[in-house]
Length: 106
Image (cartoon, rainbow, N blue to C red; front, side, top):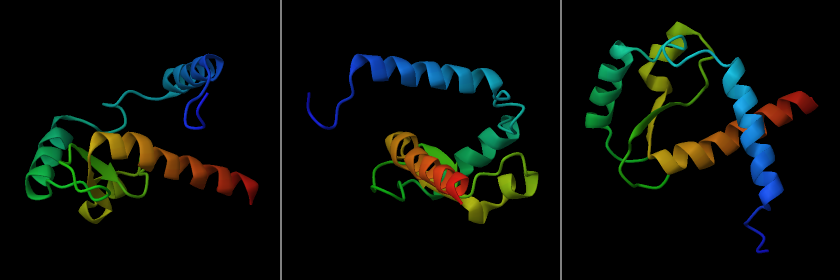
């Protein structure tokens, strides 16, 4: 198996871990992603159409510092960045996991 692939048992373990996480997580509306956010997001992407990481078309407005329910940080435009979905889902999430692991070790 090539080094960049994972075995079927690891795929299933990852799916189960994500399922457990999603069951404990508040809904997107409860986290602040309302119609007001959808409008602000569309406006932001109109003015910032390029992914900050790869230069492709941006489709996601990412919070650079996770807001974790902090409304001021959630709506702070200087905490927003345009990303394409692959960069958001792959690279940005990996960065956040590494930060979490490092925080736990210290």
